[in-house]
Length: 123
Image 1 (cartoon, one colour):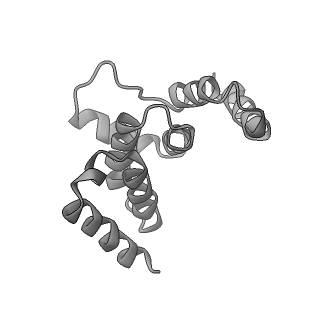
Image 2 (cartoon, one colour):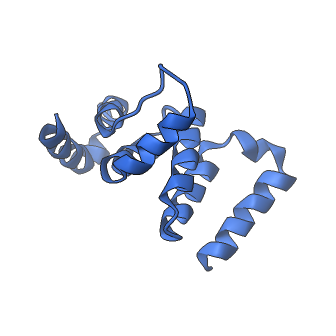
């Protein structure tokens, strides 16, 4: 499926099935699709909405960390449009959250080590 088709599919899900409007996974997928379409500013809004809707989903939190880490100018532009002092805003915030969420999950140990290594370089 092409990214434009996938975006349309998710848009239809959101329009026709209200239960998906509060599903962080859907917005995470839309964010990834926007990155694939080279639209990092639009991806920001989807990533941060996904994290708001699913703050305990380690995959979404890790994706937000990576996004913030490698798209700082898009993050700054997005944050300049919103006013939320309680909002996590840095890769460090999201990487740290990911480590907390996955601390009791031994199956994610190799991923945790990679995140810890990356976190140590941006402290």
